[in-house]
Length: 289
Image (cartoon, rainbow, N blue to C red; front, side):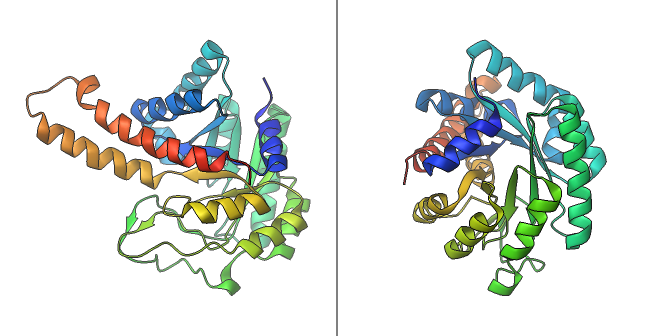
């Protein structure tokens, strides 16, 4: 089996993308893994600081390793949006396959310093680990939004600058970069999410020389995914859409089956609805442009 870094490089070369889906429970994991197996594509499971605190850091690792070993399948685990070196160290020491230090709200200099520190430690423990950096702020919550978050600016001047991205990658040694290119975390309730700046994605990819990661993939139309993948996006994160599908379908399931008390019964429909979203996304991500 290839390493995660090798799968990402392959996706970059083939103009496809690996799907990265966040989970908070076994139902989410079951939905993502079932579809990945059916489509026979590598998959990344993401857990943010709160998600992995809920499941358990070492428990997350044990779950993913058990699936990878039992089925000999390329399923990998990423410590998504990690905001301190201590939390990076925790995930690396537990055995995560990838980690992102999120210093998007820091100054460029501070972000470079803390990301470099994270890269050096992670690689000293596991040379094959994938370390990602983030440059440009896109919000921090995977939820339904009434309006654009007040601290998020998707105007051209506020997005990631390609020259700073090149400097960041060179000085930190990250394997991948997550830029701000018009994407936001979460989904707007009453309007479409902003458009991705495809030209900026292309420019950043060319100047940095590393695969790019698109965070905040929920709410982005398929045509934007295809165009972004073609010019440099190799990993795409989806979270909010799965959360919405799970919540809405679970509510309906409980209302329609008021006497059912077995979780494995009333969880069937929520899992199925999440599977449909995962399958739709993966088919778009893995079809070469």
